[in-house]
Length: 378
Image (cartoon, rainbow, N blue to C red; front, side, top):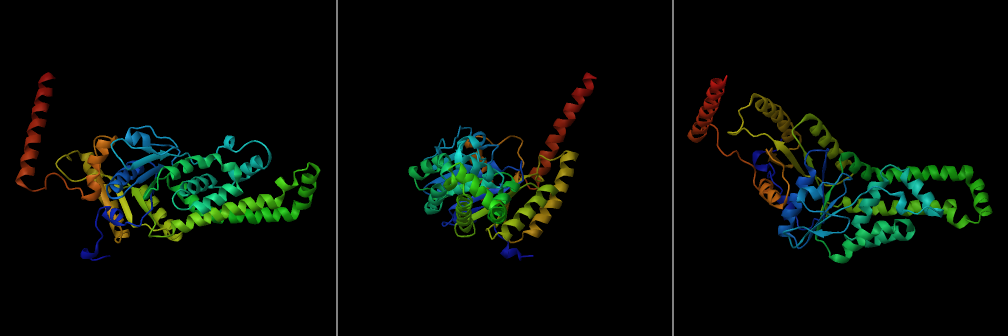
């Protein structure tokens, strides 16, 4: 356990102050508030960076709902900002964009059979404008059928050089599939090689008969897969640089979310990806608004898991966000909620003070009056 003087600050100031960061990933279990957190982080970064782009790679896009503005696969300026852009990219691989003839169709079927191919292709395309141009150009040259998928990246790259890109990622499993992709693809290549040794002669004869040997030859197929493998390895190399990339875990104070966060942190550590921030959302604080027995029971349950979070991650920057009675949507609501990211939330009244007791007494009088009125009706 770290000494009290060594406990990291419970805010995201460290993210804002790290000028070298290029890519900030925000992820976690589904339904914990990743989009809200990533939106606010991008807004805070826009205060200290020349230009910021937030990208949603979650197929269930919520970025448009969070900002109450329609976003597409083209970077769009967020209302009320001069340097914050947003875009939503569907990472799924659409066969209609691949073509239906020749090598494109065959490669599409092979690619879709590999777990994680959609996430890998999406991240590879979106990292291209972020100073991985040579890597992505290699992908385009070796895999021509992804040409259409490159259009958002080209637009992104031609518009401006974003100083920081925030990724609103899909739920944990999708992100982990991306990290596992190089190893998965390598295993797939080994299987392809074994098939080549077994059926290579037959395949060569068939392709020669139909005059498509150059296009459908096993060497062409494996060459393209190897080209993709090189691209993803380059992408992961960028991920593993703590000066360029960090991952912010978002969770809520419940068992399943704690378990998912622990699994995510372990996997990120395994793949050497920097992570030193955890945002705990939907926390019930012991303030003047909590009188319900149900809420108090939930508070005790949450406190148990909060203690575990601080015990497990005593060297992390852990930011606690309050549960609000309303949704946080729209730029103004996001701005108001953003203060809890840079200043730890404090209940409006400290328990045990005269003001707190007077407020409780006033609320009890109101409840008594309501109960007497209801009794009178009965």
